[in-house]
Amino acid sequence: MTERESDWTPSASIAAMHLRARINRLIREFLAARNVLEVETPILSMAGNTTPNIDSFSSHFSGHVDAGSSERWLRTSPEHALKRLLAAGVGDCYELGRVFRNGEAGGRHNPEFTMLEWYRIGWDHLRLIDEVAELVRAALALVGREASLEVVTYRELYQRELAIDPLLVDIDTLRNALGEIRIDPQGLERDDWLDLLMTHRLQPTFSPDHMIAVHDWPASQAALARIRADDPPVAERFELYLGSTELANGYHELLCADEQRDRFDADIAVRVRRGQPLPAIDTRFIAALRHGMPACAGVALGVDRLLMVLHGSGHIGDVVAFDFSRG
Image (cartoon, rainbow, N blue to C red; front, side, top):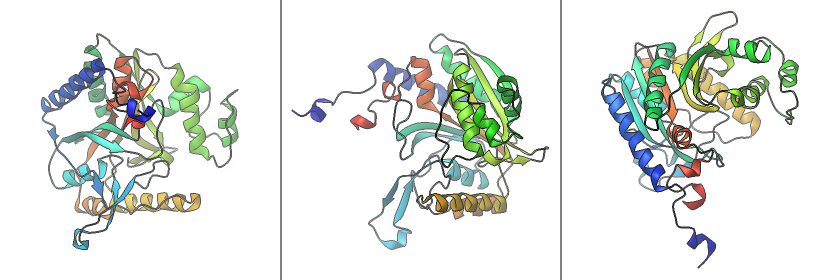
């Protein structure tokens, strides 16, 4: 028997699988109690994620061409499809399911993982923070834990902890703020240095029994969030951390179809410069925005990340039945 044949056992313990089942049930009960509708959307799409730092898996359909483009992309999140449902009038909704990201495998990453994404009509990102924290607290209670919540702006956090203004300082200041941490600067841009400060200087200091919601990010990191015309402008988004683990990313959602198309085009331009694959832009999503999507806030939460925290593990393989090496 080869080593691969003998490695048939699950990477997660039976206890971890039971915990996952409890979390899935909790999520559904939590959102059902708030009249948020569970929906299912396609895993394969004719459009891919244009974000330069996220790579999609692609596949080819061998059936009749009337079914559309033969090249399909495995979703990196259900975001665009859920927003098309919002534009169609479905109301508050969520999806709990598998998503896929190419090139992301390691201790804290698996190329396929479970994401919970939900949308609340008429809410902004600040209101949604409270509901996300409430869900995380309910999950922690399953293992007898609690966590406090701090809500702070991105700017305040960097000023308080690193004594720099992340919205105004230059790249050299950001690089120097890394201190003794040495990073190859080749090809890194301003947002890359900001991200490195978050992952290498800030996140490691977050208390394990403390949630921190960091909101109002640099406008250059808006993704699909609205930009508010402050001085300087900021993106109305948040990230929620439990200890050093990033759990959720939420937006006060952008509604303007033209601005969204411009952002997709900017992503493609970056991909061209980097020689990356060029996924098709989701024109159906743009059409849904043009039709009219209700004002809303939405959030994506990494269920496997949450399970890692609850299970007390730093390795994603400990909470998925079969990790990438055993699939």
